[in-house]
Amino acid sequence: MKRLALAASLALAAACTNEKAESLRAEIAKLGKERIEAGTVEKAKQEAADAEAALAASRAAVDQGRAELEKQEAERDRLKQGLAAEVARSERLRAEIDAAIRSTQAATARNQELDTKIGREKRNATAVRDQAAVLAREIRPADPAWATARRLDGLAEFLHRAAEQYPDDPVLKELAGTSIKRALPTADDARKGADLAARARDRLAGVFELSPPEETKQEHKP
Image (tube, rainbow, N blue to C red; front, top):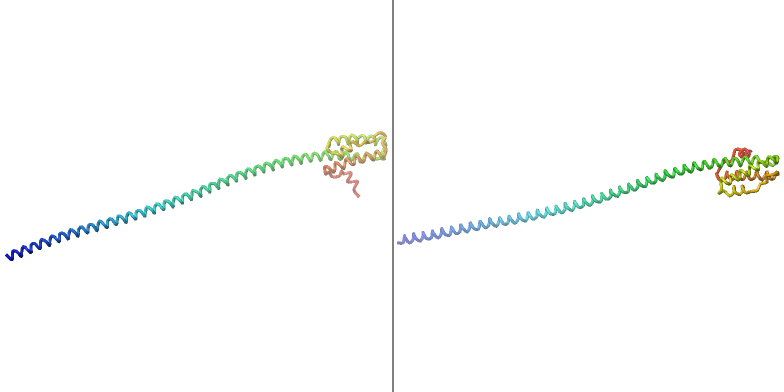
């Protein structure tokens, strides 16, 4: 009986020991599983944090790229505006240059026209001046009265024509209005006529800046 009781006790003890072992193995398995799940969660959390960090970095890179692009576009717009301003300035300068060229050409044409007109007026004035010089030389107090009368008639006609040709000249107008005795002139009348002709000659030479006539040059030679 004692052996049976002992055997039963050992069997019961063995059974209890097996139960505890199974329970311990189950607990250990459960703890291992929880540790694995906890590690997985931590890993997932870390991966999520890394993904968030990568996303934030990507967003920052995108924002930086967008800012750089906006900066480049602003610089492009500034350069385009500067180029447009330079083009407008060049066109304005070209228009001003063209206008200046046209103005210069017009002024040159006017100057040429004036030079031509002045040359023509000088030639006409030289011819009138030479007529006055001839009269001043040919009206001589020692000549016969008939010859002096004829030359004084020519002088009166010449002074009248000169005053008409140059109506704005007060000296020629005055000379043309001077009374000259032409019938039976005396030596004084001849000298007066010669003086009127000489004054007309000198007036034309002075106004038109004419050189003295050849005969006057000869008279002034030593």
